Length: 79
Image (cartoon, rainbow, N blue to C red; front, side, top):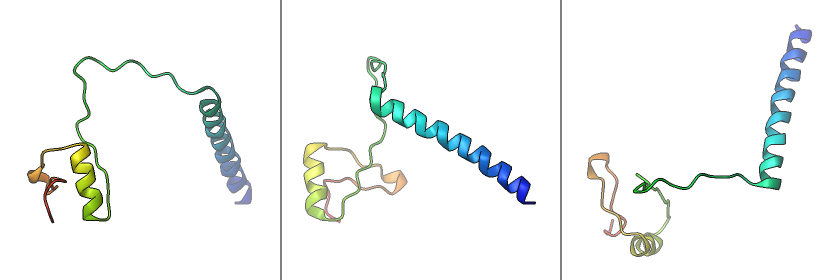
């Protein structure tokens, strides 16, 4: 039983080591991203705020229309 557990831990260590190596490489060299396609735009952006003043500030910076069918609110309306 312990031998099987040890094997699982070794496999997990290998996977974590590979992930750490990837993160280190990205931190060191960065990541190349392709240029956005023409006419491409984000579909949804969610910015969580705790107070009405912050919500109003974001509404001024990025006015959005409400998505009432999903129960979401327009950031420019009072709660």
